[in-house]
Amino acid sequence: MNDSEIHFVTHNLMIQRNRKLVSSLSKKYRVGYIKSLFKYNQNRLLKTDMVSIFRLCELGLKSLITDTPILLDVLAGVFFPSHLKNYVLDYATPYALELDWLGYHTLSKIVAKQEQCLVKNAVSVLVPNELLEKHARSMGATNVTIVPNYPNYYFRSTTAQKDFRKSVEIPDNSKVAVFTAAGRLEEIYGLTLLLQSWKIVEENHDDSILVIVGPKPDSDVPKSKIISRAKDMQIRNLRVTGWVSNEQLPNWVNIADVCLAPRTVGFPVEWYNDKDSTKLSEYAALAKPIVATGYSFSDQYLLVDQSPEAFADGIMKAFEGRIGTSKPHYWEDTEPLLLKSIEHSLLKSY
Image (cartoon, rainbow, N blue to C red; front, side, top):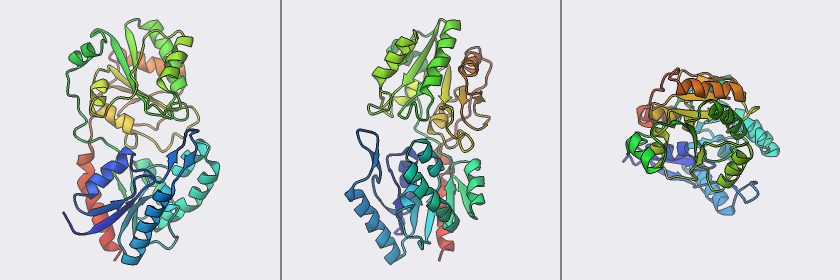
């Protein structure tokens, strides 16, 4: 391991992209980081704590005194002084737009003011796709590297599809659609559209089953409410697993004949595709056919209009074998580019 040090300052280390960044950086640098700057309380209000803020200030002060390079994201960057120069910015999502959509209007305004300054003054900017690369350059970034949110190589099924279906009591001759769900199912991930579409699908395919893998226990719509809503809609063929381990997730994805990626109508579309979406890239890691709505175009999935009829039609096309499979990509494929970009950028900053 290199003796060089880098500070990774993020609003939430539990995000998969951030954990992978720390893992990759640790192969070449000693990495200092905070675990989480922002959390949700029981009322789903955004909050922070003094320990995280103290750690953030400690890293920031140390970086300024020792000139230690920093990799930070936009939300964490809001707390840093405007004259900070020796940093690489991970611009993984247009935070100001998302925060405004999610209802954090005051924080959104603060972030929006800082976002352009942070992008423009960064030594280098990391983005997950070409859409955000173009956006970052429009804000003044001159050195931008695309680092997609692909899963690790180990995201692979450990049990054959037929055997795993048998173990979870799903008939082998069923047509199975899989939707992986963590949280923000109404805010972002189109649960209502999904259920409305599925009602149409099962009226035309009696042997079909929708498997919702998740959600988290603290999701905005927990497992019990999903089941209750489906019952009210007289949806018959639905399985909701509840939260599953990262080790078991690939096995659940692998039972699918098609994987689904809806987004809530009105959520910004123009910045998102398979390269920034963990969900989509995990489906692709298992080479599954994918039907998506509410994203930008990609050749990795069938993109349809955001209506129950269009989404249902896409699902049925997949069941009938009329859409192609996706192509697997992995984090490790772009890790050398990530490390080279950071090293080159930090050398240029001196």
